[in-house]
Length: 433
Image (cartoon, rainbow, N blue to C red; front, side, top):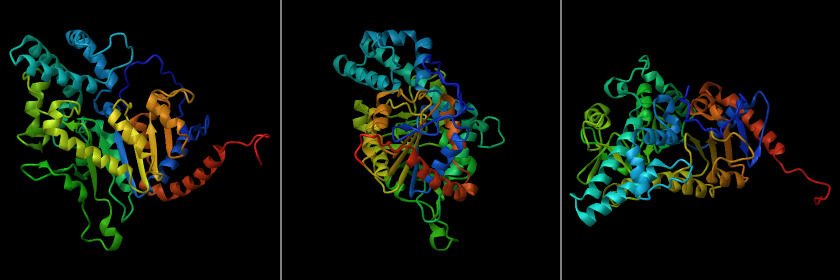
């Protein structure tokens, strides 16, 4: 089961069934087969030509990760001096009770570090203080993305108790690939997470991952990799071009990425572990991973091309004909991503399913962006809420087993017709006939 998010007094939900909102209207409220209906809707969506999953920080909680709320709470408790410095530099509003996006804060800190360095030099006290607090934030984020030390030093083994933490990621990937039909495109995973949960889960299952990096001993970023895939040489006809790999776009960087000169390279976990562990436990002050903060000068100089290419692939995916994107563990705190999701709905064949534990009241959306999605009142958007009913583990189990996909998809077609009639605006006596 997923790790519980940080306490939120406004989150109260005691039903064992999820909230499902489609086209701005709640459906199937109070029925004991709500989750079966949700699986049917997912089965129908998985039949589309293009299928992708978007994962935020909440999707890694069950594997040892932390949500943005948990990260900020840890920063407040373990680094009070950093919080005090952020307030002094006007990088946070102490009167604002909402949880800040720690990546946005880190981006502002990066800009502050560069500003002090350019203004006063690298021996200035203000510059050194900014550098220290930036390191504290980077260390906190790095520790959260490690998940489990054994992942880094042990061969992936499903029988290992540590790797059992990845069972929901493995289930998600196996059902995702199993749903693909001969001739359909391989699925995509888009994530803002720095951890390697997807890579390790894929390795457990023997799934080939196309991550945008090319090479065996020197794996450098080569975006044309995203245009390539595997095929079955023993297959015939369409069966030759089934889904034999998945595409992984890490939009904000990765612990396994390292900037080396003008190149961005991807390192095996065992090779990267020593430096990453030294930084995480405080033995080193230099962050060895590439964490992309798009508002900083470093972004323009070094990782801007990679960040731009990853976002371009995400945008291009959303514009494809007959596309399903399932969102999980994402709190809509990244304005770049939010704009792409909202503009993507201009594609009339895009279906968007959002798992959102914070949605505990159908009449009250948890944030501005979700409210916008709901107010569109389009059947393209399905919101799934209800606290733990919308955790990442629930999504993995909601995806239909490939063996039942055909029968479930047929039920889904019938369900779609029923939902259309249920959510149709009723005519009043005054309405024109």
